[in-house]
Length: 425
Image (cartoon, rainbow, N blue to C red; front, side):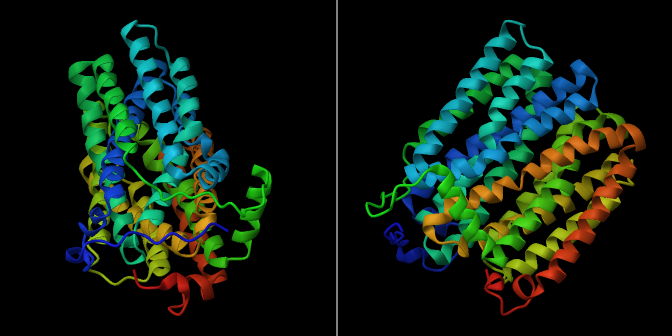
């Protein structure tokens, strides 16, 4: 067991929680912009390459393969969690963000040489996809390591602002950059963003102190220990269940299939796709602002479940809509619900996990993202056979019913107000 490290106390002016309070910790003042630039680059890159593959190949199958590859690395995220617990989360942040910059530079050069094709994009996306899902492991673990407990929820909300704002601004910027500057110029911007995130990460601290008394173990032994740890905690199992359903049945409609919806349902162009992506991100940003303000006393697990059910209901309506303006309104609602679900979910897991296990437990949380890969791979053939509306309706109804069933099964741990998972946020 690692010796406990007391988190630095914020200045007295920040004793009252508000959205600025987490910035009283020096490490967070550098981590936040590092996460922000990484998130912006992620979103611009995903939109640009997704549209490139769809236009060049005209294949929804290749599009969903590209979307699935973005999160393929969720399978090995527990191993990244092991590495973070052993080496420190800051070091892992340096390594991964250096790789992002190198691969973006590679695509930049290939685009400049006019040597790019959909299969090269898929190959590089596969490499990035092995690493990218674990980025959230290091972000959240660093926040839990450096923030005082009473600021954890607000810090998570502020952290979510980086990804939510990136989905909105990155979607618009990505679409605009390609439309007006071309793909090569857009990749200059993306590469520079990754380089900035790498440099800022050098100023981040994780208070990592190796435990000299820890008995040496193999990575597989560390993983086995984490599985046993989670299996004994129904709260963690329930949170992982919600995370898997959200990724398997909720996110595919927005993170992988939105180019298909824009082109084939709304019959719009790349700019319209940018507005659709920005609408979903704007809803998430609003929810993150609400949570980071610390103005509302919410029960974490109950909020997570109610928001998940609301998300699937909005998805069900979205599946029937063929008007872009109404679709954008629904996307704002879906984005709000998903952020209001997943931020409390992270708080439930971090609060319920001892420091020595945080990397591995959050790695298991990221493993749930594999549900997105499965959801995308299943959705492609279903859309070809039955159409988008039927496929999206099946996903939404299944997600709603399974969430309700899981809540009933673990009601003592997930729903009752007396459960530790429902500590006021």
